[in-house]
Image (cartoon, rainbow, N blue to C red; front, top):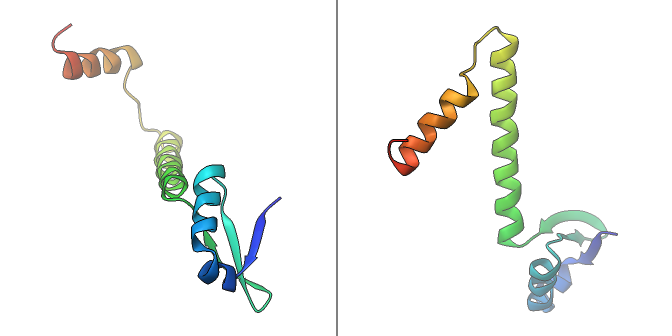
Length: 90
């Protein structure tokens, strides 16, 4: 169930809201005059969401390239090159 709080709680109980967001990794929905106004979340949750969005965008781009007929690299050749770059020549 979403945690919904009035904007006055953001001003009066910011530490409590911060601890809730960090402890539960859940956002807090802030209302202003009874209407949704903003969402507060921990930095960790925000960064995770941004990383997921970036990954989804890259996957969508790769799927579009494949649909357009682009050829991908062989996985085993790619993995061998990646290992060599990370650990030295294999």
